[in-house]
Structure formats: C-alpha cells, structure tokens
Length: 170
Image 1 (cartoon, rainbow, N blue to C red):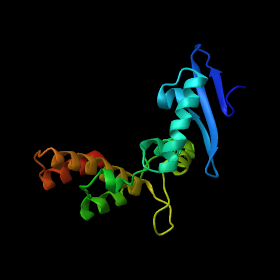
Image 2: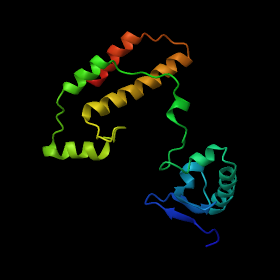
Image 3: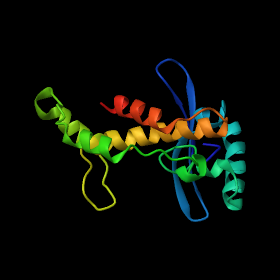
C-alpha cells in the first residue's frame, strides 16, 4: 500500500471512491470519502489533498478543518454565526400545538422511531415531545427565511409570518 490510511473502494456501479483515515496532532480522524469531499480520483490525489488538509488543520483557519468534524458536516460554525435574524413562534401558537395529541401510527413503531430519531434532549435534561420538535423545526426554518429577507432587504411582516408558521406547524 503506497499511501498509508488511504484505500480505494469500488462500488457496485463501478465507481471508485477514495477513503482516507489519518492521525494528526494527536487526534485520529474518522474515515472520510475524499472522492465525495474533494473530488479525488486517485490515491495520489487523495494523498496530496491530505497534506493540504493537515496543513490547514495545523493552522486552524480553514474550512478544510470543518469537513472532519461533526459526522461529516461541512461546517462547524455555530448557527448564530450563520443566521443572525431569529424567529420565534408566538407563545399562544406554541400552547395550541402542545395541546394537540400526535398520532404516530404503525402500532407504536412510529412513536418509537420518532423518539429514537428526531426527538432531542432539551436544556433541562428532559426529552422533546412531538410539539417541541415541530416548534424547534418551524423556528429554524422561519429563522432562515427571516435572515434571508433581512439580508436581501425583502419585506418581512412579523404577524403574517407568524400566521404562516403556525399553519405550517399544524
């Protein structure tokens, strides 16, 4: 193996993917698909790119660093760095959503899947319920929309957006 930690895997469709795992500055990085991340088609290209990545990680200043954190998400910036404008669904709408009883279906499997996959642990240590998740997602979606509108000087009428968000949440 000419490049330690670099392997090629051929998929069923005949496409080659170059995978890289490495240790740098005392940290072992998980296996990453350099074909997907950087477009590397050969192990040599992956090796060369790995040298660049290691240099950038050493500097701690590049987006290359972010590609190796948080399960492959390409950014480890905090959401507040990306979305400046925040939207919060009115408390009265939140209470109405909390009163609704969710119907998961599938003989309990739907609920188990929800709690396993989508429900998060809240700041107070308790588990999110359906309405909490819906409110979190609506606030996130609408924050992105609000941020976009403000940055691009588009009209944002809060009450209209609140009503739209509540409709979306139902």
